[in-house]
Image (cartoon, rainbow, N blue to C red; front, side):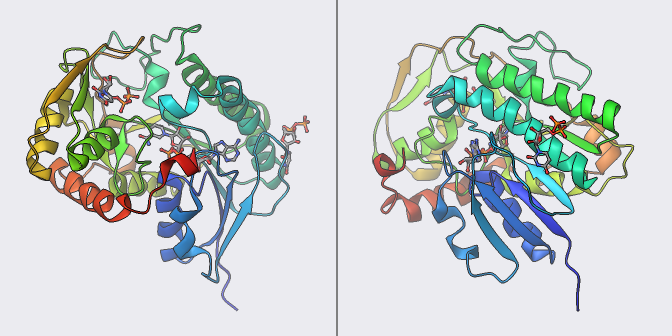
Length: 322
Ligand code: NAD
Ligand code: UDP
Ligand code: UDP
């Protein structure tokens, strides 16, 4: 009988998690997807539900979880500002208590835990681009703090479980990632712009649109997660994963207008509080340790995302989801 490695993916019904489940199944893993479907969508994993090596468990990770697995990919957490600010206390609980439970599980089973951390731990950075050694500039009492500080505390917990209990940890700091199965109404810039362009609505630019972001295509990111988990026990991270190709928000709007062939006007709106001016990952470490770098150019990734939104658009009843 073949023995398949068993991977737990928390947040597996979400955007990144569903792609990761698919990738691990393709590599011959048994996948246990644990998700309370707070911001995820079962439609993201419908096509996997009958796979013989896939199992879905509806569970809130702020409560303990007793299962048997060989590796834990810990992705469960609302990730976009609209989602994580809807119930900020629950966001902090998920980031902190949820991570304690998953680390408790990793400690009991003596298996590695990959923590999906975020570039938001750098806050509104004074250093550009951001290397892992930069300690960040987070406003601890602002509206983004439930997520930023929650994720910072989750990193602290990972390193304390590692030092105190010898738990194998793999901390990756993920920068803005996009692709098929992004939430159509999560308020993120790429999903907003594509949705607006396809509907012919005005494109909402916050501030002067000259703030920058660096966007990584989902397949590249998943490759980085899998490579990180495959490293030896001495590799703990944190390691940045993202695409260093930086673009202003206004340039992004132009590219999406061209791709969707729309003449939608630009609608300038106020910049949200604590919105970082610039964000670009320094991926030197990922290149060295994981031999990883993004490969999918923005044009190609945006085209695939637009195609997904065109296909999914008609049957995505967002009001029913949120
Ligand atoms: P997502 O919202 O699509 O996925 C998160 C999943 O976690 C959802 O399916 C949600 O239902 C689930 N979840 C939330 N709270 C839970 C709880 N208490 N118990 C069980 N499940 C719960 O978001 P995503 O973009 O796929 O992000 C996945 C992870 O990657 C998150 O931890 C996020 O912080 C991190 N991340 C994502 C990005 C990005 O650009 N997408 C950037 C940085 C970090
Ligand atoms: N935990 C869990 N699954 C396990 C082991 C632990 O959910 O298989 C939870 C447990 O409920 C606890 C948390 O993880 O609240 C931290 O576990 P740890 O063993 O570190 O702490 P302790 O149980 O000693 O408080
Ligand atoms: N943004 C925008 N219009 C939108 C949504 C976002 O101009 O409709 C801007 C936002 O102010 C930010 C950037 O795009 O400067 C990226 O926003 P997003 O919420 O996608 O990601 P984050 O701020 O978390 O990097």
